Length: 211
Image (tube, rainbow, N blue to C red; front, side, top):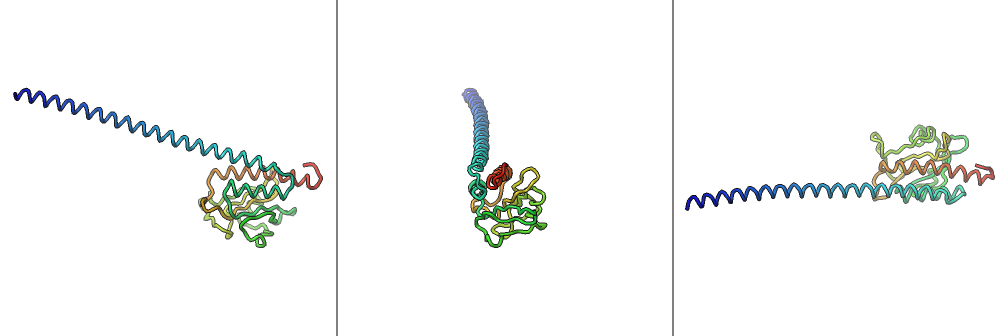
């Protein structure tokens, strides 16, 4: 009788060990499936984000060719900065012929009289106008970009080749967007390049000269 019980106990221990082993394999398999599912979800999110970004670039490029009138073109550019970049306070300037100051052409959410004419100094605005290089305060570690109209968040030259035609200046972003992101740089650079080209052509047509 004791032998029988001992044998049954051994069988139970063996079966229990087997069940535990199977349980561990199932847990490991489930963990791998969860990791695969998480990876697929992350990959899908990245693909969707990239597609959305490409759509924004395509929309921007198309809209900048909707008008051949300089002021209407700048208004389209302003609309793109609001709806695609997420700015709620901005100004678009043209560089006056002598290159000494920027003249405000269209604006949103700022005191237009205050920013009507801006002499080029040593601040980010002046440096961007002279060098033709974008200044994006939110993407610079040493910069503490300020919101509202106290200081620019971004200064993006409208540049054709080495010639600066004007400047897009962002002073504030929409509440749901606390800062500019790296992907915004590509969009702003596209708006600057395509916007400058379109503005140059529109100016030429308005002046009655070929561009």
